[in-house]
Length: 132
Ligand SMILES: [Zn+2]
Image (cartoon, rainbow, N blue to C red; front, top):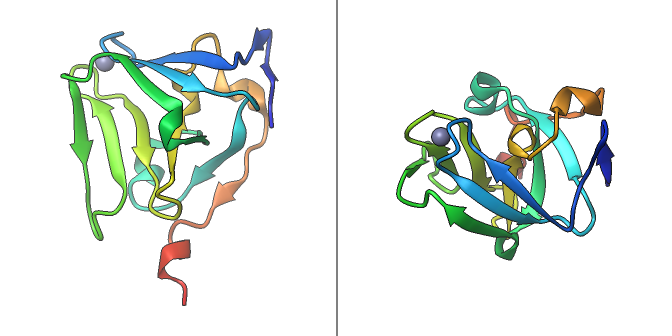
C-alpha cells in the first residue's frame, strides 16, 4: 500500500476527477493506493494508465454520472467507464475480480503517477480469467 505520492498524502476518502472536471469520484482508500499496476491487455495497452484497486462499495460518484459512458468488449465482463466530454478513463469494474473496481491513479487529486516509480505490469494478454 502507498500512503504518500510525492508531497500528496492519500486520504481515507480521496477525490478523483476526469480531465475536464465533469466527473468527480470519491474513493475509499483507507489503506492508500493498493495494488498499483499497469496491464498489457488490448484496452489497457492503448490507454496506458496506472490503475489501483478499490472495493465496489468504495467508489461514490459525486458528479458527472450523466457524462460517464460505458465501454465493454470481448466477454463484456469488465465495465470500462470514461468521461464522454474529455475522454478520460476514470474507473472500471474488474473482470478478474468483479468485487473490485480498478481506478485511474492519474485521476487522484494531487497525485502524479510518475512519482510512483516502477509499477508492475499485469499479464492481460494471458488474462487470469482465461487460464484453466
Ligand atoms: Zn471529463
